Image (cartoon, rainbow over all chains, first blue to last red):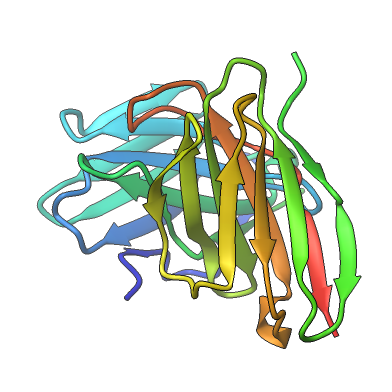
Length: 112
Length: 114
């Protein structure tokens, strides 16, 4: 049972435009969420996180939005750059566990 | 500050063999987690250790095991390898005892089972 879902395996966006990556979760106990970026032949690197007490967190070009009622979070990248082309993973955890549950990833391609 | 180091980076085994992968966390990090990445499955959680104790285990068969040493270095072992065990195995460390916080990943060990 995939508790964290990224339903779009891939996404293409023009350079300078907004990239929106989506993530849905099924476990209402999840209260901490993260986004990671992964380039080929490298380990994932942390981008941004959000706690369930907030509905938005911003860091430079990256903003994460959390909609708890819909069990949905999204990552916005504005403006998108070719160097943002990578696989993006969302992850979630809840109290009582020390593990993060990751989604299956979305491959973003930013076209120059 | 050195990052998370995983060895070996690549290895090829045959069915039925066993394999041991090693992970050295960032200095000062006491929590080490292991994940399996396969195409279409994302990162599947294997286990997490803190101060030599396994705090969480994922839904993998008993052929997958791990341990952590007093210096926080960790190893994972897969016995009786199957073709489906071919994957990228990622180790991640984080600083603390708490359940939140950024995971720092290594580059992974890519295992191919023939």
